[in-house]
Length: 274
Image 1 (cartoon, rainbow, N blue to C red):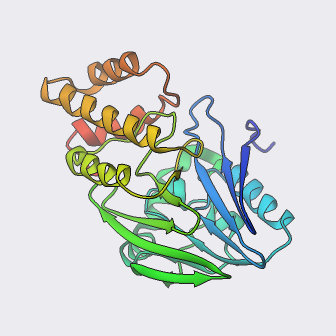
Image 2: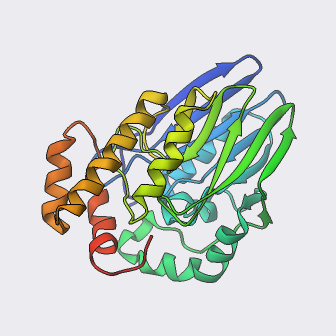
Image 3: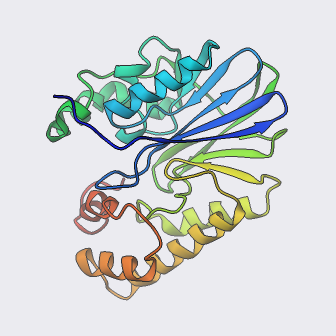
């Protein structure tokens, strides 16, 4: 029997002829509320990320198909598997773009990452699909919508693709912010804070995260405060379970505490940086 999971949440925002759809997986259990997005312009769809679990990836594709417009391309924001695992089961027929570093990583290490998640059973993909195309920092107009592509380094991940839609006031950040959920932390919290502070001074008003619901600058500011509190806790010597307990008590309103189990061995156990 296939695994059953809670229904996703879909949020749609209209900007004239353009609609942005955000598809969020469950906040419950061990899920981490992966958020993927569709920019629906008059004639085409552009997707951002592919979901983690097979069930949600397929539901995301079903939702995109029901819009009855061709998928022009899909952008993968970064190399964490919860953003690209869904490519194989739902988007193998779609042109897939990523930063060169992300593309190379998935080509070289994607299969090992997939096999490392064997405990997920039928929630993991049966094979690996890597991006075929490289996106470089710069501007491009797709179906009348201006896209601004940027590469951010050493925050939640080593290389992250962000996508600005300046004419709409929308910035697709993915894992630069976590909206209403606990963050996946790395040792680069100081640089991460500096990057987020530049966003507070930007003209963008709507921020699309990689986890949780679309957010405003208040959530960007809350992420900065969360990162500052985490840095302080580390500086005071809190590690592992003590660190997790402190952050959960400090931020009881934030959901998806299962993410601590994913990153604590990396942050405190001398494992890989990201």
